[in-house]
Length: 174
Image 1 (cartoon, helix red, strand yellow):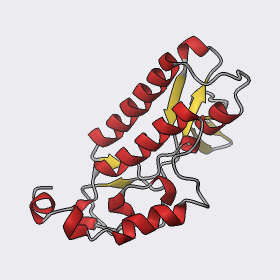
Image 2 (tube, rainbow, N blue to C red):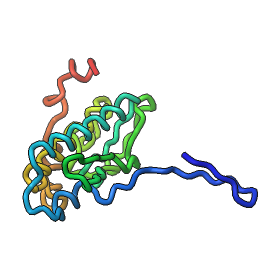
Image 3 (cartoon, rainbow, N blue to C red):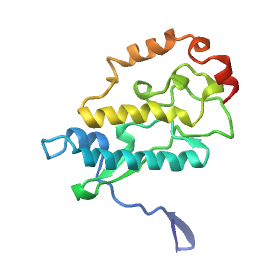
């Protein structure tokens, strides 16, 4: 952060590097017609996982990971840099619920969030979205389409009886 005073008023600024596009733009609007190389995918995913790990280390969860919330600087394809943004749905696990079941992108949400299983909500809510991002990065196709598959995705989770999927010993061992 940076602070300066002008005419007796103190102004605070956050200075961040410029990331010209998000991961969706990188995947679909990339000037290079070839998909990202295996090395680029590895680099991007390692940086995403590292960033999510840093968030989890503070006992927070992002809860809305998606390609649009991953910024990328691809000016040097051999040295891609990514940054996670939009922490509007993030929550502090120490604070507990209630969790807003609509405060995240449902097509990339974990079963715990979709089913609103508050006793299971933890840092694991970011795992399914990471897998979805990986699939989209590798295939240049989303795993679930926001409008068409969101209902299917939610219906699958809605059909799950949480006691069948999450046995009591798992819930009690959280």
